[in-house]
Length: 160
View 1 (cartoon, one colour):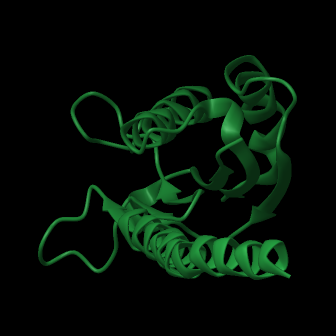
View 2: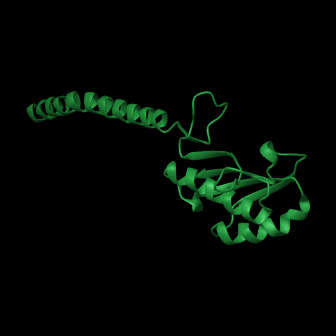
View 3: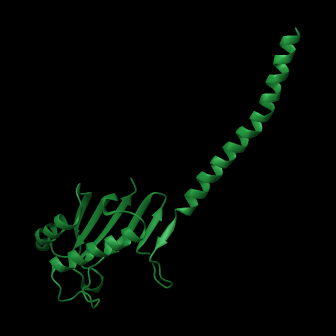
């Protein structure tokens, strides 16, 4: 009988500290999860007065806004599809790296072109510059792009 009473007393003492510790641990876990979710939402290259950011990180996903490929002077006209594609992918890579992602994290690409006849040359550059395995991709012909661009590319990347 005494042994039984002693065992119950010891069990109560152990459980007395266990419940608050569990609650504290669960609370800290919830706080950390919530804090990390909010900390991950970041605009990349947002400038006051602009209607968009060049990229946006939400959690472990990066959304890259449509990028074009101007030459080193910021001009699009006069540059061919090969150069514009090269410059466009370089602009994407800059945003991807600035956000702390890798080009291999890109999972989806949307390519907008003004002339379907440019697609074979665009594909040649794309195949060289985009890492394997290639992400899912859609290519769409549009009537026109801002600034007279021949190509614009937007991407989605997910950290592995």
